[in-house]
Image (cartoon, rainbow, N blue to C red):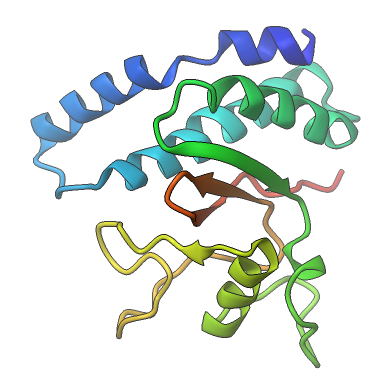
Length: 172
C-alpha cells in the first residue's frame, strides 16, 4: 500500500460526520462544536487509522514510514474539511516548547504556558470554540496533551489553531 492509496481509502469527512452525528444523537452524547468533530476526525479517523494500517503492513519499520503516510493522509483529508487551511504533523512537541528542567523521560502533561508557546510558535491563537475546556484555561485540569505523544496542529481560516493528540510512538 502506498501513501496515496492509504489516503484515498480513508472515509471522507462529510460521510464520517453524518454517521458520527447520527450515533451521537442515538446515545444522547453532549453537544459538540464543529471544531470538536474536526479534531476527532483528523486525530482518530485520519492519523490514528493511518498509523494502524501501516503498523500491520510494516510491523518493524512503520515508524520510519509514519510521517510520509500521515502527511499524505492529512493532505488528502483536509481538502474536504470546512475551515481547515493547513496542518502540521508534530512528532516531537518538545522541539517547540521551552525545555523543562528535571522533565521525566516518560513524558509529562503540557501546562498552559507550554500550550501558549505552541500557538505563538505558529503565530495563531488556540481555538477555544469547543465543548468543554479543551486547553484547561478554566478551572478544569483535564487535558491530554502529553509531551511524548505526536500531535497534529490544525490551522483554520479564522486565524486560530487546534492541537490534536495522536497515536503514540511504539518502540520495538
